[in-house]
Image (tube, rainbow, N blue to C red):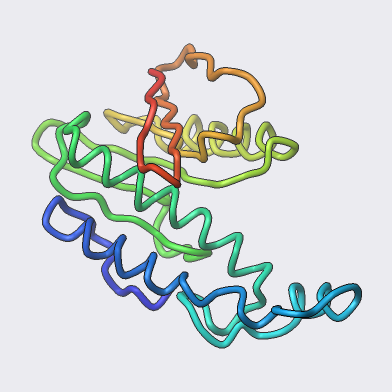
Length: 181
């Protein structure tokens, strides 16, 4: 992602999210009028050339963008609602792998580690299990552990986890969240 700011605060979250949405406005123009095999090839192989991920295909960009929207809207809601005792969250966008977790935060009140994803209902269970496994094995000492995902991902309601991992369902169209402890 061309957005270099990975520390999200109440002061910058709205402008970063707005700029990201602005970059999305032209995505899709590259496939206008294409059908059949030429459409499939354009989706899977052609370099996008614009938007937040200009050097990947539309298919790959869509996967990254949808996860980024979960992070941007989810963190935005957490900051505005002050659900956790943090004023700043450090995040990883796209397929970055610079840190141990997609979402991190710390304050005198504690630490937070989290994983974020956007998945179709058919793949949601697999993604959720992988995120939970990572948090259970590598974030044991964290005060707060969260998974953040697209609200339409789970086929049925979200059930609380016995080990207190927070599940944050994010509606990427409205920015609202639902937190299940």
